[in-house]
Length: 108
Image (cartoon, rainbow, N blue to C red; front, top):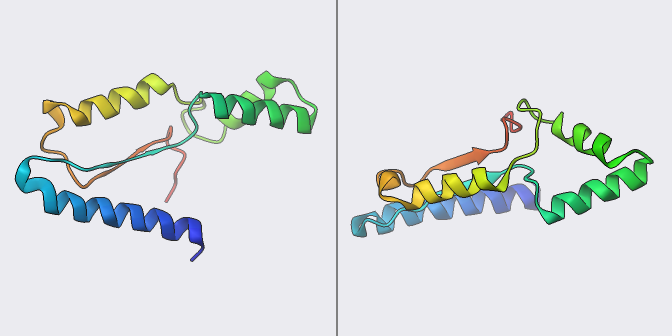
C-alpha cells in the first residue's frame, strides 16, 4: 500500500475513532473528501495542463470535467453548503462518516 493511501486510511480511522470518543458531548466528526473544485490551485493546474498540451484553457477544463460522471468541476459553494449542513443542528446525528463530494469520480 502506498503512502498516499495509508494517509487516507489513517485520517478516516482517526475521524471514526474521534467520533466515537466525543459523541457523548454532542460533538460530531466527519470526513469531507473532495474531488476537483474550481479554486485557484485548480485554475493554475488547468493553465499548466493547457500550456503543456498546447490546447486552449477551455479544452483543458472540459478534459478534466469529463473525468467524472457529473461532467463538471465542483463549485466551492457546494462544498461549503455540505460543510455548513454538517456543522448545523440538522447534521447533529451524522458522525463518523465519509462524504465524497467529487461528482461521482471515485469508483471504489
